[in-house]
Image (cartoon, rainbow over the protein chains, first blue to last red):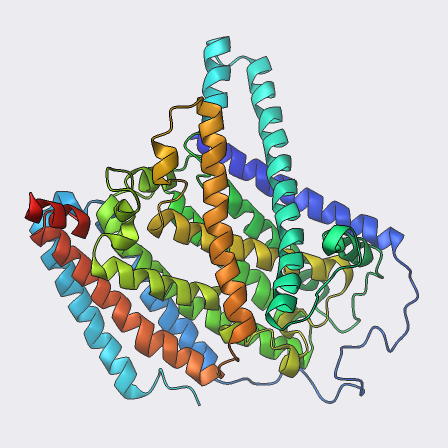
Length: 118
Length: 370
């Protein structure tokens, strides 16, 4: 455990420390001449119009939901794949049924038009 | 890394405070070296991008700083470093500042789990591939954070598009890698590579194992292009439409971190493709060489990096050749083309392994003729 996961933790710490250090350094090294125009959000040169936090397409929400569903299936398949040879035919048939059920849902989603992007 | 730790543990025979201290400091040194090398690669990557772009478009490309412009990335780095640190007034400050760190740390942390040569493994995870997939999905959190926190219309659109695209294409990636896992029965990067050794050289690579894995490779590569926002799928960053997508409001080093993270991601997806499909650090000639183990490992490292850079070159080539797709075309490609094919491939590979008892095409052909 220690051998394998400690380097990752340490690398994370180094990464964050390094990045924060660079930002702090660059903050003090760079010029500091801010003006109201410079600190306003970029909108191709004109003053920002209206609020940014408007409603956006519901499609993104649908994609997020579908992603969670399908990603859980993928995560579930990994342990199955690792012991596939041990399970043999039994494992294959089980997964075949599982993917079959998944495909029914997939076809339903497709027919409902959730995968259509307009 | 594990060999070094083993050596330390053997040397002190028990974990004394000194050995633990040595161990931790060793890890810190290795971590720093990994980070520095990763950043060197990321800098050279931006140079390669522009030079290859110049080459393909019959331009010269950067050629002023250093020999043939090789030091351009250092000049760019210094320039970014000395830029003013701008945090617009309307942004969600905490998230805005946090986003580049998350993206950068996640993309650099992925470098530890790769198997660069037989012995050069920094962290020998038994779930290496799983770790890589998980850690590279962390990038999307930084991206959506940046897009939302910037409070700019370009950033919001870019962030939303990026999030939708990256999460969508994660599914074909996960599924296409499964067909290799079915063959290797392991998620450890080193073991996956070692399972591709054997008497028939290149034909032992998993990509030639059976037709389904062959298709899987192309599904993976296509999805990987979308995952790292490379050109036919670079909707999130479309310079000509969204200014710079989710990092429009970022400047100076914060922008630099997003850029470096992107190059880190490109390396990681190419390295995964090399490890799983293209034999990793193996090349038939080097496998049979009878030379000192360190020299051999060095050669293997060279082979691994060479293969990875070839794939990166391919990505850049595609980037400078193809026009961009529309958002609806990208979503169509993912959900209605790659996804069914990926499912089909898993079933196909499973069936193949059952029918031919785990043997690949080369083995079967040889059996047929003997």
